[in-house]
Length: 114
Image 1 (tube, rainbow, N blue to C red):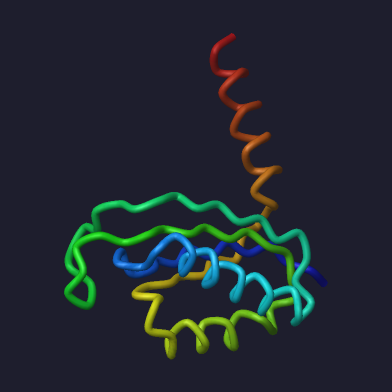
Image 2 (cartoon, one colour):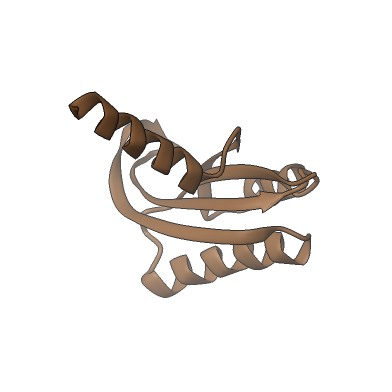
């Protein structure tokens, strides 16, 4: 059975654009090698953190949506925990795909307007 996952991770703000792309590609390849499908990457850019994390006040936010059986989550989070470029990460298991959820939200909004 395939589940939908959303992962958000925050990279150090002092990384160059090439280093950011390298890190994103590393984790994308990690997922695809372990059988994840429909991997969507969204670089949300550099933003101010709500509180200092590892003495950083800013971070580069990366959102990853993918479909997998769940065996990828623990090894990926372990790799991120050991990495020096990732300062925070979180994985959520979604009940619906992100596109289905967005379509449902749009449908609910249009129903309320009428």
